[in-house]
Image 1: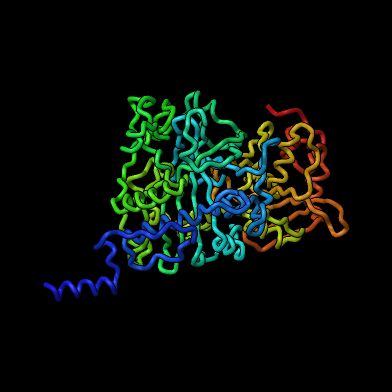
Image 2: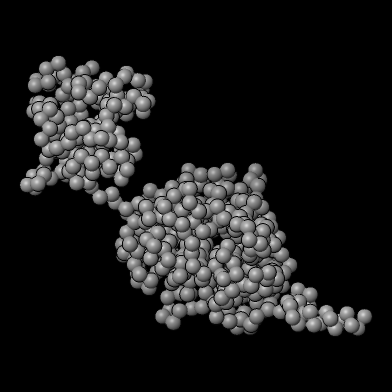
Length: 567
């Protein structure tokens, strides 16, 4: 047997026998590991995860939190109207709060949901908010590190239109993080067991939180602008390395999220489990919408933490305890890394869920499995495992020049009129459906109004007499008398009114008549047929013959003497 023994020793020296012998774990370091080798063992993966976690949680020298808290938050990347985000290290103009008189040096939590574009996010990936033992909502945020952000910035992928026809392939070294935070009450919570931060919690009144499903104690705790002490309860880390183009997926939690033997022994009431507050008719891990009477979410861990992860946790927590580090109160839940070249990577750990982020679908949760099918703002394009790319906004559509081809292109492709609304006042005419038309507009018409015109009316419904520059009113003209929703095949032409400046700078209506996709039949500021009808009749409401801003009917038997309201 001795020759075999020496062969085994030699084999171990030339390969990795860490799983055969006693597990070894790297020393605690603030240096970010650069790779997890192809074919890595589970112990190597756990070491890689812990070293990554500790490296990015190194405090900054200027006291602005951890390294990852100084990465770019998604809210500061995907700005309204596809505005260009500020460069790395620069504060974004979008990172402002409506909370006047509150210290702006704190982080801003706009998100009450893991997936919402707004830390006001409260809904998780499968819907549902998470409520802690103090009946407060949990809040979330998403970050990109420098390589990932600068790739987005360079390619202008913060703009949905730039993403539309592009393939997204993040560079090696890219990292995306998702963090979950709970509001701490120093009178009820042992804050020494949490990594904490001061935060502005901002929940706009228009947020989509379903308040009807909350009991009074939860609703009363929802403040739309408040300064809070928050504690980190969960952190997803997604890291692209040379050997892992499908990323390495790691997730950590604060130790007291759910009930364990350790919490019971220490007499700690978990953040998300307190049987004394349970509702008999509600199962554990029930969404609030399914159990609206519960004043906190009762969470249990449905996927056991693997033994190899527990061993790594014990090793790192022991060293962190010796250093009196707050991170001893955090634990690795699991790691997913590809073991083959398929898109989902066939990870050793098939299910991976963070109790604070995938509370309601733990047994069906797989980070890499879900993100493998992530789409960009173009739903036909994959986005290299990042769902956050779908948050990109469209830029403000630049108004067209007053000429036939540009105006037609604008209403058909740039700002498609089919997405517009119509006049909201049905006092004289019902614009929400096709209505009888008059020459020269065919037997049936539908009217669409762009935002500029519509908002001008909504702002001044009783006093508006003139529409602003940029207003567009479009009529679909049908050749037959169709049902309430006419068929596109019956559409003969579009007639368009566009308030613009002529070559002399005078604001006038530009008139156009065109087939839906061309050609343009006629278009100019001086279409006399349009002008003689729309602009010369008494009470025309800036050319709005059938919609005189809700004042009186104009289309009558005697239009120059507009009569009383038709009954």
